[in-house]
Length: 135
Image (cartoon, rainbow, N blue to C red; front, side):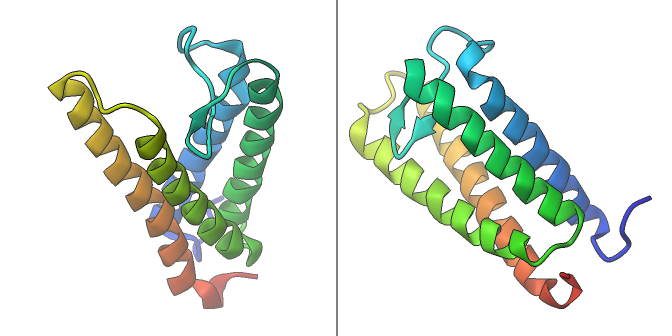
């Protein structure tokens, strides 16, 4: 049964973060293609670093999703830490990699950046607004 204090928005975000966590856990298996790998501080990982860090980040995101789902206070801190990480990761990735080769890749990149920032910061802000409901 859904926690009425959580509401539909946070319920949806908890599910989305759980799905994101599973994709990170599975990154070392290259299910999305041979160049799939966790982007960690602007660098796409492969090999052993990817096999270690991707599942760790996935577990952190599962913990975050569980915190949102259960309306735990620690989710608020995870939310801001993750939003800061996403922001730094996007800036470093843009600085360390060449610009997109085509207009469609550029549009995809812009949309990705907007959604990544909106969801990460939006979740943290939404949790802040619901701070009194967190246990």
